[in-house]
Amino acid sequence: MNKEKILSYMESNEITGKITEIPDGYTKIADSAFSWKESKETIEELVIPKTLSDINLKNINFRLHLLRKITVHKDNPVYTDIDGVLFNKDRTELIYFPPHHPMRNYIVPDTVERIGNMAFAISGRLTVYNKDIADGVLSVELPNGLQKIGDHAFYSCKALTEIIIPDSVYQIGKAAFSACKGLKSIVIPDRVCEIGEDVFQYCENLRYVKLGKWVPNIPKGAFASCDSLEELVIGEGVSEIWDYALNGCGKLPKLTIPAKVGYIVNSLSRMINHWHDCVFTDIYVDGNNNRYTDIDGVMFSKDKTKLLAYPGGRQQSTYTVPPSVTEIGKGAFWHCRNLTEIILPEGLKAIGNKAFYHCDKLTSVNLPDTLEEIGKGVFLWCESIDNIIIPHQISHISYEMFSSCDRLKTITLPKNLKSIGANAFRSCKSLEEITIPDSVEWVQDKAFKWSSALKRVEFKGKVYSYDEEFKGVPMNFYEDANNNTARKKTQVVINVIQGDIDDVVECKKIVADANNYYEALCAGYSETMLVLAKMAAKETKITITIDHMYADSYFEGSFTFNNSNEMFVNIEATSHNMYEALGKAFRIALEKTQHCAGTSLPPFGRKQNSCIKGEENGR
Figure 1 (tube, rainbow, N blue to C red):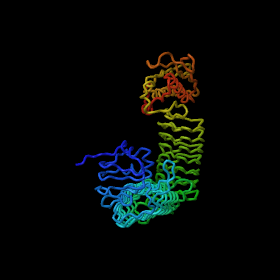
Figure 2 (tube, rainbow, N blue to C red):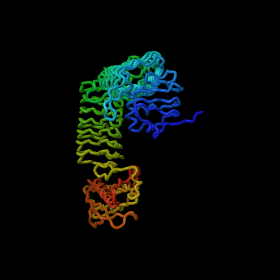
Figure 3 (cartoon, rainbow, N blue to C red):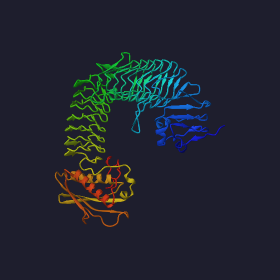
Figure 4 (cartoon, rainbow, N blue to C red):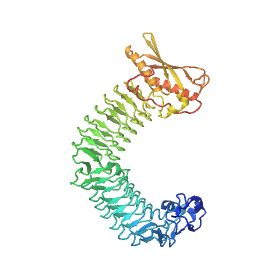
């Protein structure tokens, strides 16, 4: 058995010139071969010796940009060539068509049963190192008898304007025609029983597609970013439409769902409704479909209890959801930019994630009292909503629910609300005040970040927030910050002094470090509020004193505040702004700790749980 001999990076660098002959004896081309710049810019013909049996087409394709011809030694047992095109020995597979082969209209030989992976990929690349190159295959005539088209077979054939897939083909591989920007129409024959993911992705001029009746599904990304697609005929055998299959197909005016389709991974609205020029107006469902139906071009579950997709190209400004609906599906009104009002029925119980995402003109939406669940990001980027009332059964304001609602001025939270999720009111730039009910047990990270107009927060509960922009919260929190040795070993001592209560001064000393500062601050707040509640005080003066800080041997000498020798800072507060004052105190303490470390260090890591649950660690 012959020993394998690989053409390496170093050896391939020594092979240059327009006609490049690989020396006899080499059996394989290494992954790193032909990566030298001179090789890329000079080789136009590659001569394969009789011993070579393993060619890495991916590397040749992407590196030998100017290759026009491949010639194979007649005694090579694995490969052969016809007119500079590479085939297997019995010519049943077209392996490689050089990217700048001079033949612009190519007829594939009748013997070919398979177009190999990446066989025509990047044919006609327009520029290489800023040099204009105008050649590349314009059309390919495939033979009757062809059975398979491989993965990426025609990937990025930018000059290819037409191709007819013969009736004999039963398999089309992943991204087989992806980024073929010249293709305008395609018909998939009935015998095809498999098409791969991303098969026509980025075919930006593709206008018409017809799928054969035995195509079982529209795979992930199949027509993503085909932003000129005007008609898609889905074959009767299709039973599934996968995620991103139709992403960005905003020029598609209507879509008919056949009877067998029983599984659509994501909302059709979320896939198709994009940008201002969306013309998608109607979704029709075959009456024999057992899972889905439509009402006047809007898609629902078969029993009409779930609204699944509203076409974003409709011009109506108002839509009334039918009374049978109890759930709005995920992304159901995604990018419906013309709607100003959506009327929801009594009896509605749930709204799915990002249901009204980017409904720019939506100013009014009634949330019925029957509503029990509102998903993540439901009103994300609804820039025109200015007022909303959350129904009493809602216990959680979810992640990004109102994020980037620029005009939201007032919001009424339910009395039984338990938590406010991360980024819930992020970038609500018109929100000036909010009342958080005493039922709230959790306010997550960045809930009010960049809500720059927020002037007043009435916080009735006793729980501490994670949100750095919320009034009184000291800083960002990072999970890995406890790994920072210098900050971890720094301690802060805070005296919380509660005074002017029947001339009695009560003081609690709280010691905090990176492991318990969160609980310590909670404890300070809880201690103060407990005393005030016990004494029934209404407007009690409070002084928070940061009296000293100390650390281990990482820091030597005394600490100073504000470039002075003061060893304490007093912060005056009242019972009405105690929460803010404690946050300010802790921010000062930690800023000074950072200053003493002599470098810009990340904030402490967060310790979540005990204070949220009502336990008062660190007291």
